[in-house]
Image (cartoon, rainbow, N blue to C red; front, side, top):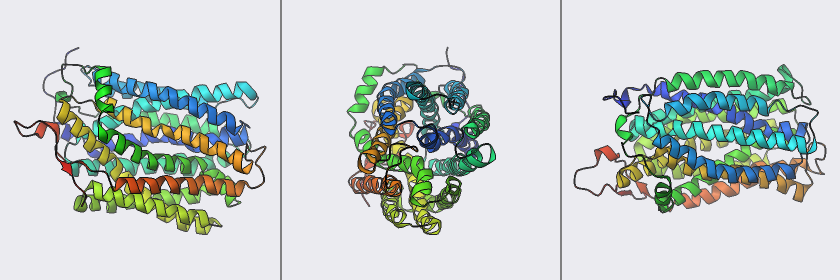
Length: 457
């Protein structure tokens, strides 16, 4: 179907209305990632070795379907745009799969429990990939200049942090105290239903307002193999992707293990995770304004490198914490570093997308972001291996078989592993240069479309 006549300028899409979409996309997946170990391993008794196998299989499947979904989005041509149809379909599907994920019958065990976990974990991640590839692709399209883009990105990260307060910090209270107990599953199912309804409403509200730029949807539909080959030959795809993965995997470990860190390492009820998660998220939200100002003064690249270093240092303090007060004190620094990464990481990726469009004459944000998503999907493999390592080194296999020192086990999981990853990322970031801000449609005539490179400051 052909596109209609000239659309309103994409800049007319209010930044807050685009940004609020992050609230809807974040609630489901962060409840899943933050509670899946507690729900399946500690309460239902799924063995951590089986959990690790599922995460490895999931990563292989996701590595295949992720770029395919992004490519299909790039090739979509409707009068509603390229991205909106996928957002409107993906939102209710993710909500339904999340509810099913947390509705596993308590009578399930063994292979039955493993299959239920595997099927719905993979489906949830597939629909989450569909949503985020399309939602993320709108950022460089709607806001081509870095100052506008930085503001929109900070707003959406702020909404994400609000969602994290709800889906991570408040969830343990809702699931184990308000709607259920620490040993039952009913609270998780009720909470998932509430979050699913909220997420669908917010994503639909955002998608209906997004004013896509018709110039980004060229008549020629990009070919999959040619596009994939071009991306794989792009040096920045590998350097930025792998470095960003160090941050993403580290935070995935933190978000998935913080409830059990509170239970075993600090010796407190799971509900107390609310205070630790809450302070980290609040500091992160407050820091977005400061980090955005640093971006305006020093640029995204310099700020990204600084944020990486701050985040790496913060995990040392968290390892040394002995009670809730000292853990919260360390959490302040974690929040500061995390805030800096939220404010800058997507800006670095957007620079790479701009350069690709300028060089190749095609806007393939969906495929490119899905390809970048491959690195973030390493989260599942690494968290699975990290959790399995607790069984090998510390004897923690499940809530029924926690081993001799689960407290130390989860200090390693939550602090040491993330420190190593972010330290590697901080060093690698020092050697990365990204293209300067020059959107494709603003390239001067007669150039080859390849932006210059921003050198270290």
